[in-house]
Length: 218
Image (cartoon, rainbow, N blue to C red):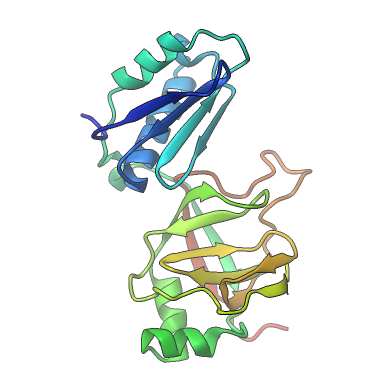
């Protein structure tokens, strides 16, 4: 099966940028490429990095690698857009204390009570879609559709490491202190990025995340 229409751009001689219709198509193609690599498909032997985004997938190769055969391999992949629904993705539980400073605002935006916001956030597994501005930061999608909230009117100059946040229909955990405009609903002690861990990132594209309410905490 196909992911639908795709456009392939060559990044000089260092890789390909594949444009697709939507995030589901990106994740399906990403899974197909990674499976081909795991199966030691020689067509993808030169690929050193695969980077998904909202509507694109970037494949990086050493400079000078012929890109024609790689493009043909990408176009020739057997990709099932529905494969992710039945795929055995790893599920990672992240314990959260839901005492974020924006929890009340999220409740107001959604028309839910604060307890219902927490129940919605923990009640549906989220899917790690693609990385963001910092190592370990992942956009999480496919959560409860009621949790659709705008970013803050005034971004914070400092968001603490471990802050659990919402923006639009996505959720995320800040892996390190940084500025940010997402709505903060809780906090976790879980390390999203650890340079001493293999791999250092807790999440990878396609992984499932289940948030767990651990009460008041400290």
